Length: 215
Image (cartoon, rainbow, N blue to C red; front, side, top):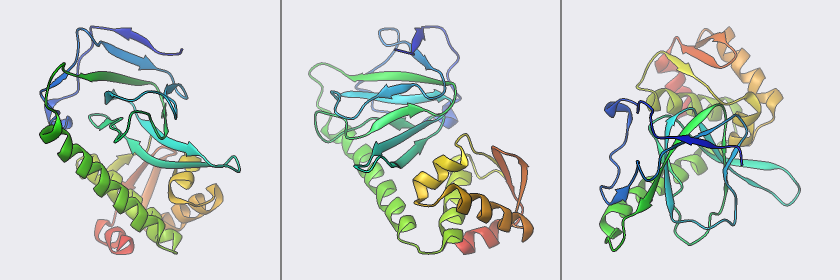
């Protein structure tokens, strides 16, 4: 087990945190857990019933296909919640992308959670449907443009967007090869739509153009 815990850590700003159900019970009984890059948070088939929130860092949710390939279904950034399941077991793996802190929430005993969990379930369904729409696009530029627009919106609409995930992660999320992802990033840069200050960050120069490509 790679995680270790502590009960003293500064939480992210309230503006970065979604509204979580009050019937979830967090620290001090459930302190923050730290996971190094690549550490497993939970595995497919493990018992569900616990809810998680990213304090800092990033998480990828994925499943291994029968042929050994990896399909990433979601990324979760600081302030975002994950781990909600319709059944009693997890259907995917959750793994820290980089050094990540996770706060664990559990159902309060005897609490009626139906009205609180429904918005979370619907939000997860909406994001899954949006991901399917992106995967249904044949053009690699459209997929990556939609991904970058989504990442920008989730980080407050800033021009400079941090990408904690690798090009391979992005490819496994969008159904593209790493070579295609790198080629499209270079093409968008050459068109002046984005700049690439570093490997893990982009600057959106022409937001309208990027948004148009994503539609």
